[in-house]
Amino acid sequence: MRPNQLPIETLRWLERRLLSLERQERFECAYALRMEVADWLLGDVDANLAVPISL
Image (cartoon, rainbow, N blue to C red; front, side):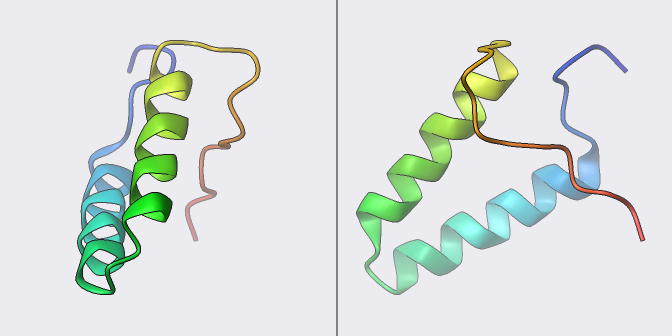
């Protein structure tokens, strides 16, 4: 896996989370999450995301 590439489990979680936020009409939260993911995928050192630990 390349650096800053999302594992499929994480991608699926993000998709579910974004759908949940949008159903709750929390569009600003969904947008902010998308932007954080985009920054992280692009390798931005200021991105606030960390790769979730697999349990």
